[in-house]
Amino acid sequence: MQEEVENRTVALVISGTKLTARSLKAAILKYLAWRKDKKKYPEIPQGKQSLKDLAKQNAGMTNIEITDKNIKSFERSARKYGVDFAVKKDRSVKPSKYLVFFKGRDADAITAAFTDFTAKMVKRAERPSVLSQLKKFTQLVKNTVTDRVKSKDREQSL
Image 1 (cartoon, rainbow, N blue to C red):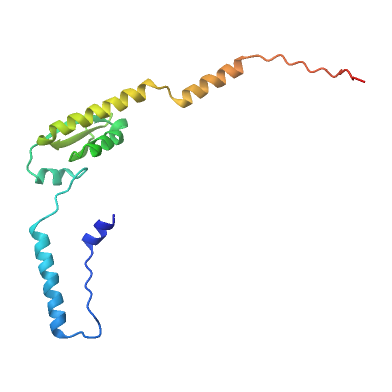
Image 2: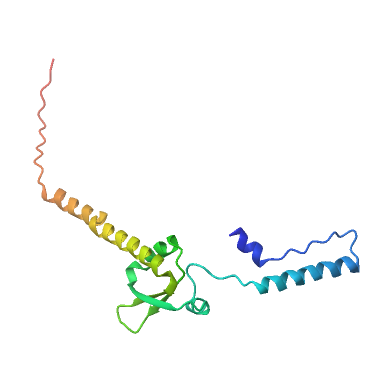
């Protein structure tokens, strides 16, 4: 986070006691040289990005469909394996689906990310929901009849 702030802002610090035209000119020239050098080497986006940015990298794109419920889980897996990808929502189909575009050369990494993603989905499907277990146990408690007879007569021991 701090690096992003530093990259987006430029601090121009000059000693205020000896401010001359030469020092101001030197500071401006250094700033302009820094801007020129920065434009020479543009920063390549990594991880989740827009489809336009992914297409600019000229690496050939392929896509895979993912359902709406699983999109966040897939994004975590893709970030874990360092895959550059873009997510586009397909609204033409009524149960909306997401198309995940990625670079063609990231095929091995995307395969690893998908195996990790499917393993998480299978593991999640195997364990029962906490809410369903809670409903089941509340039904069991309601169905059990407790025979508690309160008697008012108590024996007193002397």
